[in-house]
Image 1 (cartoon, rainbow, N blue to C red):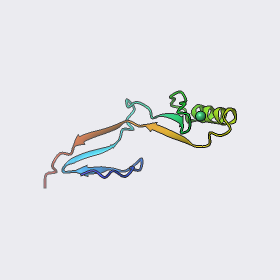
Image 2 (image 1 turned 30 degrees about the vertical axis):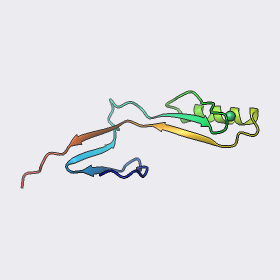
Image 3 (image 1 turned 45 degrees about the vertical axis):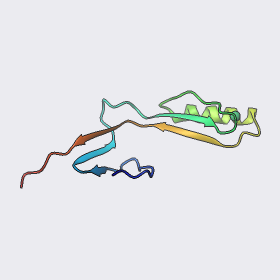
Image 4 (image 1 turned 180 degrees about the vertical axis):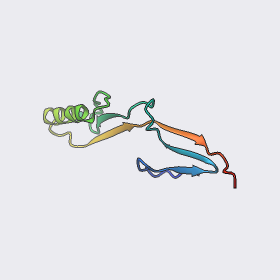
Length: 88
Ligand SMILES: [Zn+2]
């Protein structure tokens, strides 16, 4: 059974003999970032570069001086596979 707590990037979850973890293999999609203003709902572009998303937030805040809180969304690929039983 999986926990609803946010997993750390290197956490390996085990359920029965299945393993699930962030996909860091070369063919995996890169993590992407997006920022949303919690007050007006405006969203940044989605980017693999957090800096450009952070720039959007730093540009939005001075233009809307009452908008102080934001939500960062990270999309990260994961993969799961069934672990083979080991031979004793
Ligand atoms: Zn806003």
